Image (cartoon, rainbow, N blue to C red; front, top):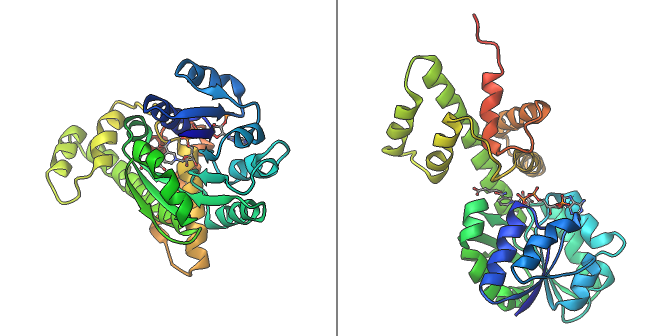
Length: 291
Ligand SMILES: NC(=O)C1=CN([C@@H]2O[C@H](COP(=O)(O)OP(=O)(O)OC[C@H]3O[C@@H](n4cnc5c(N)ncnc54)[C@H](OP(=O)(O)O)[C@@H]3O)[C@@H](O)[C@H]2O)C=CC1
Ligand SMILES: O=CCCC(=O)O
């Protein structure tokens, strides 16, 4: 199977390497074109523009930072829309809001193409290991056709119906995750400041009802102040912002998520946006606790 891949950040790089390893022919494009070189070493071809990739490939997957990037790659000069046509499918796996996804879907369909949104749960390591959870919605026939690629990229794919449902599901999941990360971070800090060993807190948490993969993975690195980015904090804050907007639309009060969003914004203001989202922990350390 031949696929195009737009966006070679942390996730897109790992995902396109997986496709190449499993025998897919992959044509890649990235805004910073030099990032394509490593993929060429793994057997990829390069497309000079998103339009060139779509022209060459029946299916094109995108994994881009945010709504603005996702729209730019489709609507700008040399973008996806210039070459999408009947018989071609566009699969956007970026985390965006439902409105962005719908706008892209309508434009692709107006040109005769098929569209699927397919954001993912799981971070850098699951992307490297082909263990993502795929939250797809949109054209059902395209979903069936692209399943061989999803089976390489993920451990489970959900088909959630109409465009927008994938985006919404992803935002709900990440809203919960971002809120949990803040509670976890406060707990680690409270344990330490009140004279407990935070390492022992990790052991206690792991044996109880709130044991989870995120605490297990991030706890030890947070205690070492290691925030090497798997999921960049600026993207987590974007997801909190988009989830809060979804809450506004549906009149759902979300005071916990709103407070978590403020903490991520604070972290961004401290210049921590490119670090892992667990670096929100640093916002607590930055507070004066001398009295
Ligand atoms: N990292 C993670 O754990 C996870 C991330 N996600 C989501 O996946 C998406 C990608 O995340 P991730 O790979 O971590 O992000 P990165 O920041 O590592 O990569 C972002 C990608 O988007 C491209 N990009 C940014 N702005 C533009 C633009 N205006 N036009 C064209 N391309 C642009 C970047 O290009 P360039 O190289 O030129 O900057 C890069 O390829 C995001 O929506 C994120 O929320 C979902 C699940 C997990
Ligand atoms: O969007 C990023 C999600 C990260 C994760 O699921 O661990």
